Amino acid sequence: MRQEIFKLQHLLELNIFLSYNHIMPNKEIQNSAFEKLTDEEVVEKVRLENQEFYAYLMERYQSKLLRYANNLMRDDQRAKDVVQETFIRAFIGLNGFDSKKKFSSWIYRILHNEALNVLKKYHKELPMLEDFDFESTEDLEKDFSQKEIAQAIEKCLSKIPVLYSEPLALYYIEEKSYEEIGDILKLPSGTVATRISRAKLLMKKICQKNR
Image 1 (cartoon, rainbow, N blue to C red):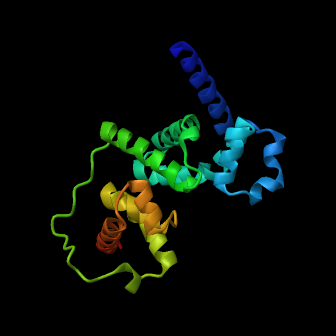
Image 2 (cartoon, rainbow, N blue to C red):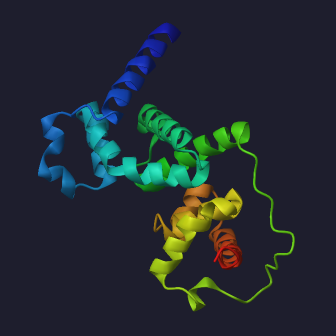
């Protein structure tokens, strides 16, 4: 039984790997009707009709997850590896996904876990600035537009600890709500708000230092 499960898992991983590396999916997947379906509806089609439809979800999320992974890993190759492993784990665990919830938060959560596992193995966390005052009432929005904040974040993100850079990237770059970020990071909305607030102050100080 275990041997059969291992063989099945290997076949699933190989199938995802081929799709991930731009092997053309079934023509039916390219049907414009799929564009009107929500992620959760596509998941149901994968589970009930055809597993090849998973390639459509991969197409939707590949660039988003790679961007997110790059912001966490700060290493292109490791980010690609994390994204590939995320797609594999999501596919294998798809039957356990609750389609009443958001697929996007679910798959971002899987990537978050994968990335943290790799970071623990290879990455030394950046120290907090010793002279930084989180009690400051300054805020990024007072000095920067939304677009400028996103641009500043992309430039300065690698200079702040993942504890603060991750929720900041999710909010400004991935455009997730506090509730979605809470689902991804498994944190209360209040904690998410606090971390984003502190991250914005930290980002402002870092960006100003590098001007």
